Image (cartoon, rainbow, N blue to C red; front, side, top):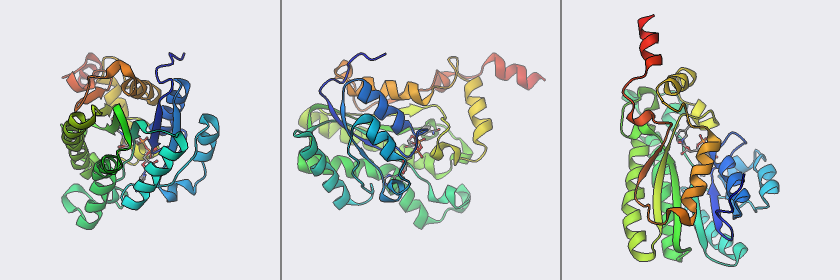
Length: 270
Ligand code: NAI
């Protein structure tokens, strides 16, 4: 069901790789809520071609941009403004990648060259996007920016490895830039800390299935799905949440504040 929450709003969605992507589901939800969109992803991801299906269904152009490349980001924002014929109301940052995890390197044996790339792609990219928008004055007053994060920024999940540090940095950038953009243009910036979700990035974490089942049993409401996350992001882009900024918002069925559940105790007693 649609509530027309984003009627007339214009947004950029980063990170729709395939139909499992949280960004993919968010694009669909925002479109259903009345938004006009631009889709973007890294040139290498665009070559897969999947995104064109999404583009057709949400009537959005696709503009390639590597989030670590300032020229790409400038071009993306300039072309988006040209496409919309106005400034931008919202941005979803749904981007993450760990080179060390991908190359099978443990947290205690990091390659620092990979680590720098991980932090750049997964965390400082939010700063790059925001600084580019700031310089171009690309966002409308009361605009909204959301980046996706994970609770490993606060608590240890060993196999999440260097991505935990990346998420802690990402959340800090959201807070720090949230201050400046709030002061300057009433733009709000938040992170959404999502339950484990079966996507390409998610499944890259070692032992993901067990981990997901554990989180589900440890959450009073169960794991939040990608579709639920998309709906939450749409609300955060809407005028219903104008005074929410600089927050890390847990969207996890209650996992973050649960010490233990009966299901886990029963399993331990077996
Ligand atoms: P996904 O694999 O579908 O999305 C990750 C996206 O990052 C891909 O579209 C990929 O092409 C893009 N990307 C990677 N390097 C890039 C670059 N240099 N430039 C531009 N884009 C680049 O996976 P998912 O799960 O939808 O991930 C989206 C966000 O959600 C990530 O920040 C992830 O850490 C976060 N998240 C995911 C959870 C999960 O369990 N799947 C849980 C909590 C947060």
